Length: 277
Image (cartoon, rainbow, N blue to C red; front, side):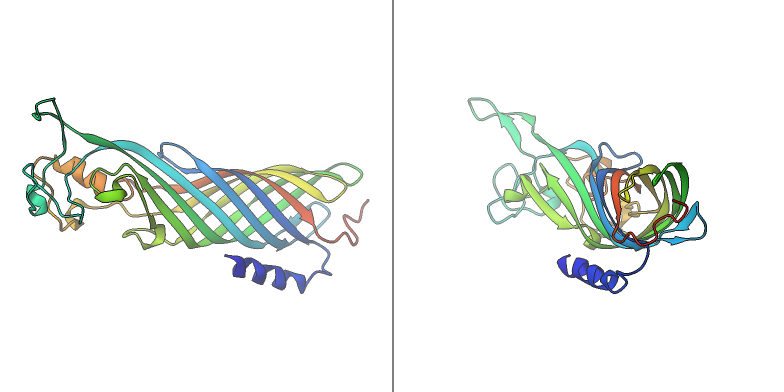
């Protein structure tokens, strides 16, 4: 990611003498419609604001945006494996997955009492190279002071991401505790996204603007998994619907990104800033 930031700094340094080159940085919360909980969101970008009039300007920018979401926790059967990850039956014999046994709690005499389950928790994080194309409308409230309103569109391509899983009873060894996978390598993930954005803020005489903005994705981050796509048969002890839902990396749902962030934008040069003042 460092090399992308360095490239952005270099490109915008070439136009450092422009009237309205700006840098924006911010953070907040991101999630998806229907997700169980939000995660942290952040962005950093560089752009150029071109004024059509004293009140209206267009401000394209490019930078990085970090989003994510959490899905609802679910109980997964705690399956038996040996140290090499081979599925086992209740007698400790290596079997194929269709005859794999579920771990049971036992009494003092070693008798099975009840099946054991593991609470699985999944968190997704996605990082994008993002291009914003908003319109800014300025309402003058005093000398060098403005209320700002923003609306526009954005497009993004995923450059990194991770699915972090904790407590997966279907996993073997240390993976039962925790493991992670590259998000954009998961079957069904969508690397591209685009959407709408809107916000409002306040610009101070120093050319620093504080802004509250929301971004709403229009493309699904993943396709719904179809149980027919799974070629591995499920253990007989487990209900098939629960099995497929647990093995689905997206928890059998398809969502769209949204985020709310508080951002700070600073004009890097102040030549002829807002001429009517």
